[in-house]
Image (tube, rainbow, N blue to C red; front, side, top):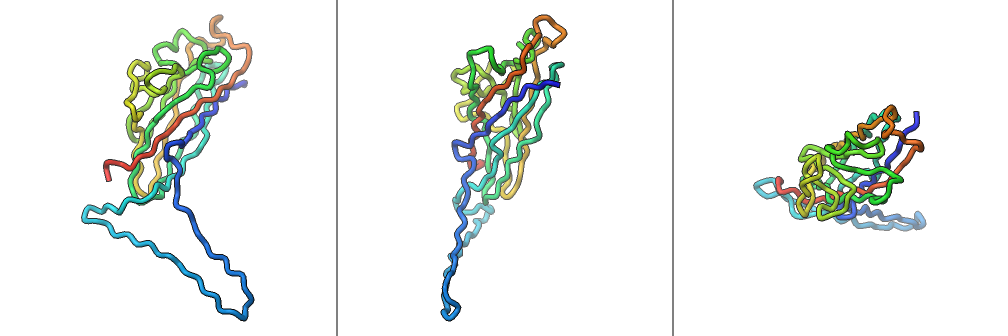
Length: 214
């Protein structure tokens, strides 16, 4: 079975994968000496609401994901994208920007609204991503929405900051799910014929923010 492969890059360009650096002291000296080393201890005390002082993000997010569409037009979703928050604060994850590397050509995959799929072949797909928040819908057509929409038909651009798709507890994890649907014209339709397998590359930028729900 021939499949079309799309690679989705989760680009944490905003602040999505900053972490606290680890430090170590390597001691190399003759054993007739008595070397010393210092350990810096950082302490934090929570306030009465349980909030800790402002710190740094310590978030791990996979940088690639993929999906395939079979010759029968079946959309095969990838495994969940796991966001791991090892920091001391709850975080919000936003779908901030979606970019198609070939938005104006017929040589790759085009991400369109769900309402237009029935008359398209399987090189056209709808895509969305969600965690435990609002679903973000993705689109290839550049515009004021940065490729992020609040509805499946791509008629309502997301807000300036994007769409909040997940909230992750401190020292917790949250799965993000990429899902979609392929065009309705299958290989049995004359208009659904796809002679050559194709692939394409998109970039999804996620924004990480300190949650307002600490």
